Image (tube, rainbow, N blue to C red; front, side):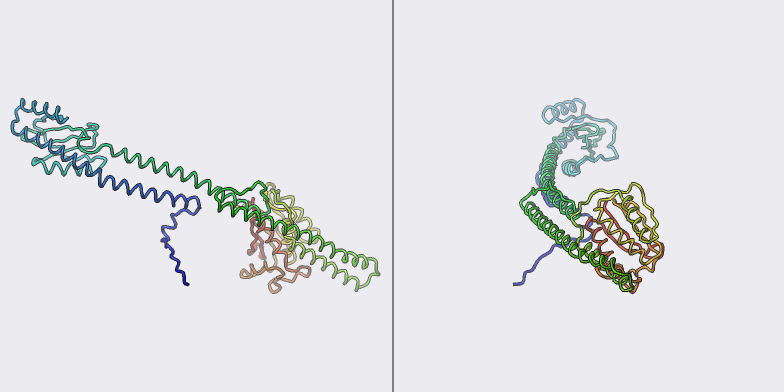
Length: 450
């Protein structure tokens, strides 16, 4: 059976504006449909109900205005105008006054809701034959509508309550809609945040465990699926810890078993009569011991050592002094207050490998460090040797690869120094890369978390 899987394609410009976090996407999934629904309901309300009610009210007000204008035209005397104004005030709540010799205003005032202007203008145009002007904004007369009609004697001004022109309770509906949307959004934020926090804690615990930091206080919580993922993580963490403990015990036993015969051989050579053959055997034993040390260091990895915040200068100075005693020429430039999260013994072993590798292929080694812009520390190990072609930088990190074609062969090395150093850096959440050195050789860039 062939299954066809449909996939919604979102245009790239829209993707740039979409949230990338789980919290943002979950909130968007919940809030966006609610907002669209509220907008649709509001539009339907104003289009089907509020507009209809406003049109009916405007038509009724326009009819009363037309009656008042026609009544005044039938008898424009002051006495008749007084009677008309009194009757309109009592029965229609309209205030009527004559502005003799006046003309209609030139400008037009727009109200907050354009539908009011359209409805009232349409109703007055249908009922009145004379020119007219109206102001429904309420700037001069709050909660009232100012209507002016041109008559031969001047302008007949009619002031009417606003609720006679349109439904004034529409804003209450909008407030309810907005309030409900805000309430639903707040509830969604509260519940989504609680679910996302459980996933964030699981991610933090996994990241910390990957860097060798054990968060003993972590416990599964949150939704059922998140708890299942957390329990699976704890089970995996326990299996990995048992494996590390078993491997550490095995390596300790192997180290002891291998060093015992080596020690006996070295002792026998030391007690024997000196000869060129014995000197060659001693060199072979020394090389064998060095190779075993590198193999065990590579296999040991983290070795169960806890990562912690450490001041870098004493560690780096100790490694550089050891390299100088071995005959390397090392220049040191490092700040006094730089710190990083690392495993001290693993870091010293990795840095010693980098310095030893640089010293084996160059005359001068320079070790420097600086604070990284995004947090953490950069440590640079430069040499003035032949370097490595850029297209073979990644190849240099492969275990047991010495790149003899591009650099002089290190007789004591087995091609594990860079692999051990990168394994240490990545185990802490950092990285080790290679670049061309300003000294002309190779630069190793070790980035450590701060």
